Length: 499
Image 1 (spheres, rainbow, N blue to C red):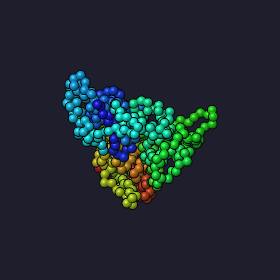
Image 2 (cartoon, rainbow, N blue to C red; image 1 turned 90 degrees about the vertical axis):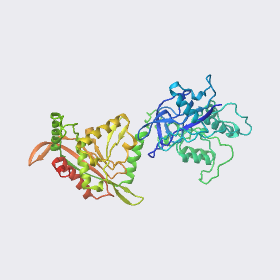
Image 3 (cartoon, one colour; image 1 turned 45 degrees about the vertical axis):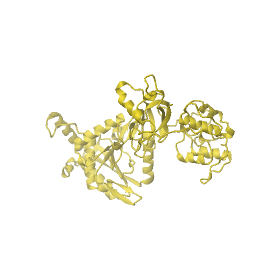
Image 4 (cartoon, one colour; image 1 turned 135 degrees about the vertical axis):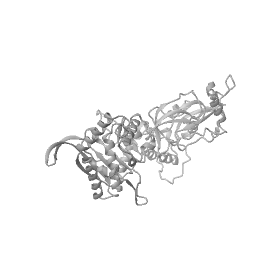
């Protein structure tokens, strides 16, 4: 007899609480091997293939492609140790000859034995627990196994008001697999559990029917129950809950009849994480911004000279190599400036009330992709020259565009360089990338009238802006940093003192 095991979305690390289903790699009824990837998910950090620790037949999938799945929510159910087929092997372990060793491994790791041992940052499969179907009073023992979700749904249906399940619930439990309750917050689940509410009888007012705390509180008010934290869970039959609140929070400012409805775009994935980080930055960091215009003519000439020598002498080990980018030269200027003003390469630990100065410069740079704004990090940028920085910027930018950046390449930055000049704008007041202490913004480099050596001339001018955390330094330090950067832009020879 087959035993159905439920595989849930594991903890993906880096403080992530959920992921978005990008693509299913298996179909219902398909045979999977131990540790075979079954779904591709996108977290706020990177794309991840999630392997299943069980070998057998997929009996159900939970969630459509594009849906958000919280950590701990079910992904699939797998029937293991199925009835023997014609050649005597369990149905859940049918394999080709090439996968014979994998099949043996799958049978050896069935419930009651060791699991796959596969680890995906914080989860493992040491042993598959034995599952037993509980028989409620008045019910006969089942003749065939049922999925955990269906078993749970039937149990709830049996105890719903007077033993009769609502029509909507009966429709959901008619199949073999129940849909997961659209609730993410554990606080909402606890509030409903303490007051005896069945969340499966409710329709949420949140995005895609998500059940919010306001929905539960409305149902409790409608049922005349108490919502206190210390209330003992009721043992009475579950009260009948309206399918939707009379006025959900999202409908508070609904348009008049006949007016076009507003478009709502969920803040999820990278966009959601960036929204949280930027909001936290504005809430926690007392930032200030200073800016200056600089004549970048000499910097552009130096860049052009480097490129020209590289093209003319490609075999020369000194002058040959890849073309040096302006971003790499600006990054080299930043690392030199941070060596002189280390206060800006720091973060603030408010719990200990300390400013933490970092010994290494891990330089982040803003990159716009189809998936949104990401900030890849160049590790140990202070140890790299312009050529090494150019190569690393190119590698990380390509990985950002293809969505293959790893979590390690998106975290741990100590200072950020934001070249918004590529968007054709001159200036901006950047928002600090929390928990860093500063960000340098660079506008476009364009010809402008400029007084050079006492004469009016057309020069290549750029606006530089520095947003800094006023807790780590005062305006004098920030101004000194920005002025040094501007001096290096105007006279790149200044860098020779630090090379």
